[in-house]
Length: 113
Image (cartoon, rainbow, N blue to C red; front, top):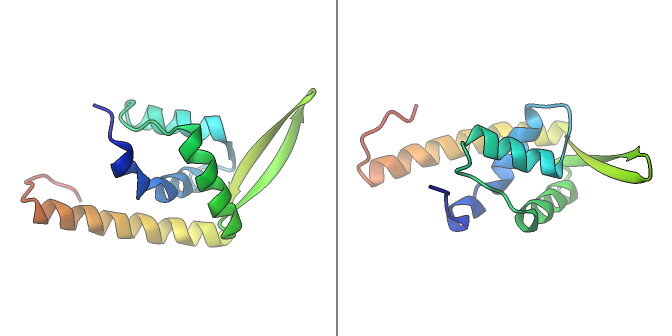
């Protein structure tokens, strides 16, 4: 089962910030592949969703970029800023509490801790 884009939409910034906070730097395709790997292909982030999210995070000062040249090609790496690390922690904590609240609301009997 692949999760719907509707469910993913509200959590994409949190996911991207978490991925970047766990590494030194990542490029876009690398982020999408890592998410697929960690979720067993249940979450698949499209380029059309990822890059606007990365640009918004960069505009907000939560992510910075670094360009590296590979021969004639350039690769843009994304790095989390100090503010981004704080935001990642806050967003993960908020999402965790939200998921627990939804589980209670929907009367789901699972261990979400």
